[in-house]
Length: 276
Length: 252
Image (cartoon, rainbow over all chains, first blue to last red; front, side, top):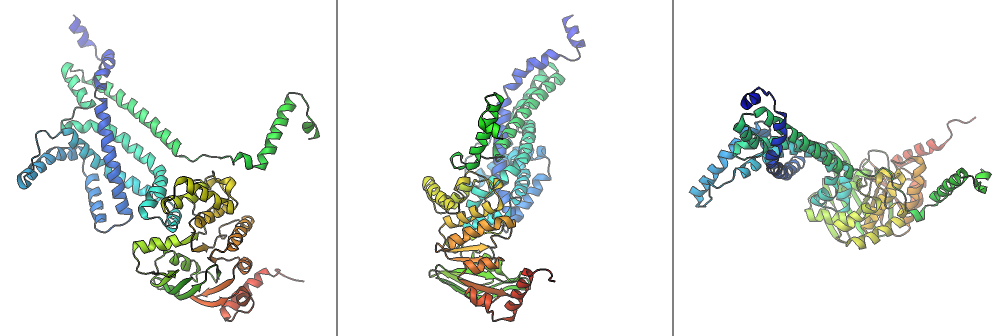
């Protein structure tokens, strides 16, 4: 009877909630994957963007070729290539250069991070390049005129300025990346989605488990959006700044006026209010 | 002593600077005037290597740099010996007035923060902008921004200060404060090259005036010599037009 009741139960609401803790155990894996890939993506993306913007010969062609390949192939294919390719590469190294990498122990996690990091870098490169070229030439010239080297100008002037422009785009791709980590199962990494499939395989309640997953991913995305907003707020220049208090003659009279107004309200009728 | 020799620059087929030779003594304020497109700004930008000339050399206190083929360290040392004030101010937008002035001191001259701060405050005081030190450029008027830009250039203690039309992008109302500031620092013995269209100002502040035309120095002398008794026809025409402008539109 019990069994029958459960079978007629088309959608088990309770299960959606009960499975959450099981899935959340793997949230750290998901976030680690996303964070590490983003880190690689940012560093490599910045490098590619600089190469393209400074038009460094040879490297520039390589960068364009690299970006073209990465953007022109599906992420899942890249993951498979990394998963099968990296061990093969290590095997080759072992055979030809006498190194002794333990191929069987090479973690799928590293393959996934590697592949997703490279994938991310190609997209970030374009976002960062656009942001870098949006920085006013005049400021770069001013930095040069002061005697800064290009790396100094980049670090002190150009990047802080470009950051604000690049942030929405980079945040967008980070959110994409968090969800993209669900492909990491191809490299035998058990992250949230993979765990969801395992849970679903136990009781054939696939629909419920995917709903649970959807809820978690959505919640994570909302939190990340909030954090990005906060950072954006932080980077904004203040709208208005008060001049140094002690050296401003105008504000003195403003304060007096305000005081006069307050006093007038409270019916103490000071001379100032009367004279006006 | 600054010596510029045979400075040449062309953009495609357009020869902008056609072999400029110029000796500038310490403390000189050289006003550079001339019609538009005669390479006044390009001359300054070439000296600071913001534009790479096709040929020529500059030596500042005996330190000679071939302008067309220079090493990276020569570029840096030349730029560190010169200061530039731009037409459009070009302040660092994400830094306050104080940070703008401190920036070069900290990153280029490797000063300690506290020391740089003192230095920067002194420079801001010199241009009368100390009260605005916490303001970002977007909170400052054009004239104020330009004064901060002057402080930024002066803080680096340049041997040669280049001012590229420092008042051209300003509202007429704001020109005065910037000119006042420039006049002030000119009187403090800084060596300066000043490109400007403010003829009266150049006349007052410069002790030497150069008239450029077609990439060549056409007139070179004291303001009195150049403005009152120009030798070349080109300069005469130029001043004649200037005077025409100042006459009333019609008389009865």
